[in-house]
Amino acid sequence: MGTRYFLALFLILLVLGFEVRGDPVPQQEETASPALLTKVQESLLGYWDLAKTAAQKLYKKTYLPTMDEKIRDIYSKSTAAMTTYAGIFTDQVISLLKGEH
Image (cartoon, rainbow, N blue to C red; front, side, top):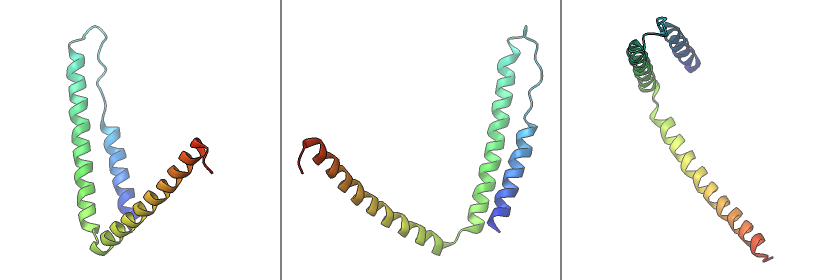
């Protein structure tokens, strides 16, 4: 069910991306170029804000406290294990470089 939301969000972003078009500006009018750039930036920022708002609403709608707790627990356990293994690996490399066996 979550993939449908992501697919819908992707399609919305795709449609919004095709809406961004620049008007052809002749090369002689250099003063109009910054105005076009400003319009494109404002348009892209507007689309970004819309997408961000939609993603936040989707996150709030599908938020599960138990899953959040499980994810935090898994993250803390995996980072603790990686810290341990990184320390062991570092010790091994240092001992190889020093020539201690």
